Image (cartoon, rainbow, N blue to C red; front, side):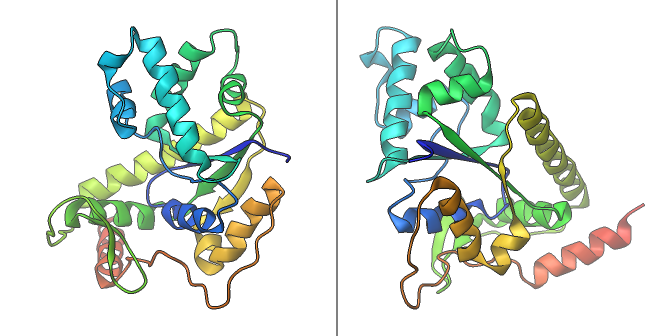
Length: 250
């Protein structure tokens, strides 16, 4: 096998949930997800039902949390899979530096933990649409749904979303910085990631997924009639917010 692991480097509302679900379905490419999402050791431990009191120090607790995350991220296979959002990055790397003090670069620390790693950079070029999707999800509480309309992820009670130009502008700026930070980090670490875009993923979901599988040296035959497991949430509200934002632009 060419790689022991892969990390999807991205930001929210980039299509990463769709990509992760499709890769997971193959049962060949691990269990991709945000296994180290919240920047807190206690949150990492809670995610795997580990108690801080069971360990003599933070180092041992971190070792246990990372080991549990690796086991979960492999699923039933041999490849570890991780989705890494930019806001989780700094704490994630600080914990790997604690575990692997002799490794002198971020890449060396990652590969000390997870083996030879493929990096996938998933981006969304239209930052306004990305911001609208994010602010609307935050307000409404609904983050993902299935093609049949079932809710996959809801984080709060239903609320009617309201246009907020300042929130959208701030989110556009945040997403722009996140992409720049990823690009800078890839350059500093001499990493050439596999590049995927939200547009390509939307136009050909399974083709985008197969690019990741091919880069990993894996092949998968699509079952007859299989459909993407996550539906788009964009609707007339998204279109209205976009029109209003652009009409109010300086």
